[in-house]
Length: 258
Image (cartoon, rainbow, N blue to C red; front, side, top):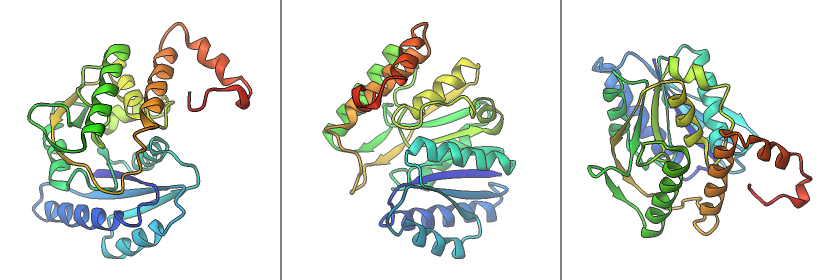
């Protein structure tokens, strides 16, 4: 079974179109026997709007849609909880996609078609063959972040942050309890741990379109992303004691988000 996780934080204006598009697309694939079965798990993390009502309405239309609800925020946290739920249900392929449908279902399906000889497949906006519509500022931020990731963690990928990834059950099961980063470095932490355990992850080109009403504050996010990677690098080095010592400091003297 295919399990698709969709993390949702205050997505009442966008999640409906995404669920309808993904539900119809994969229902059609199931009818054509291109996939055996699928489920879409929406993980609501600290929503204070009407996202839940929108999801519950779509659950009545598509039996494959279900939801989990948590008060704790964080995209990475939501995806991890979705992974755990999918692993309980014996899903053989488990992936996630952003709620804004920057990745349309037909391009998520490319991950499924390419995964056969790999343990994971990730969509990439950084490959020459990719078609990406986004702002110059966001493109610059993505490239800067990728440079830091490649320099400090030696990951070979051109884009670790694209919100469309798919993994085989066995691979996720090996690392699910070891992922420690639940915010900006979640994707990097996941990919880093998979590679350390010898799993093969393929990066493929995609078609991706930046959506309106993005929640990313591009004046604050770059610092948060950079500090998260520094933290992850230290945790995977002999200097991990620095992070542990920092975590024990009183909150009032910590550098915010480090």
